[in-house]
Image 1 (spheres, one colour):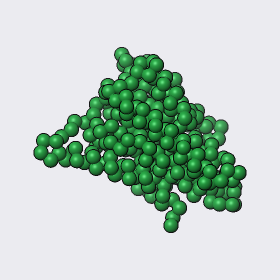
Image 2 (cartoon, rainbow, N blue to C red):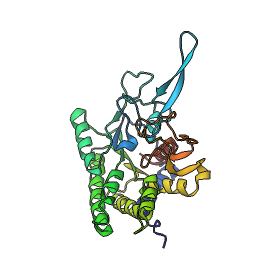
Image 3 (cartoon, rainbow, N blue to C red):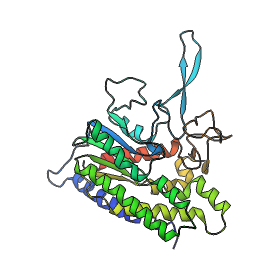
Image 4 (cartoon, one colour):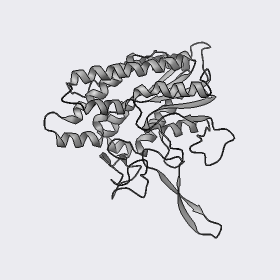
Length: 325
């Protein structure tokens, strides 16, 4: 059996259940209908994949726009609204802005950034605690949760001193603890978009590890570890399409890697950013020769590019439309 096959299997079962609930609600049958959910506020919990710095920088590839000066000349400037990350795409569905990226100032941004670079799944509890202390969470709010990649890499680095079975067990415990935080949000009345961890075995980091180590295929190993995390996350949360929508970033990452041309991609194995301009410093002027934000899947060894972010953002928007929130 292909060792990538089991990645996200239980998560796919969860999605099937959620999708079935959504289909029943949207198709109706008699008078059963639902309205697309419009949140009052959006809260972002997770790691650097969802993060915006205080100045709007992303852990991917940042974009420039041309600015017309009063004297008629033009200059280029970084624009946090260009090449949005996935949560910016989701927030734009309702015209929400983040304080970290608010080029057309809103009286009160309705999207709130709690995610932090380097966050582990165990850090999500603290992020939620912070928001509860600073303004609360409740019915009418939407939260996004994406974490676990840093856990997988941290545990992987213990291999082979730590066996794969032991790593699987540890990642399963981490995932279940994250699932408990998702359920905590649900119990507060918050709707949740939960994103699975992208397949870490398809990253440039994984391919480099495979080249450096001859014991086992490290790319396949990281795929299995990703599956161990996502499987336990999928079975640890409440299966209810009226409260949680699942976005399968692991599956989409695999599809993009397996069929790059179908996604307009030219490179799915290397990072686009120059080594001396790692995210969040990376932008469209600091890319390796031939790279672009729209045709390379990865910004660096572990951070996805704008092309990947756009795909996950579109999936999140589709989940909002199809789930009977």
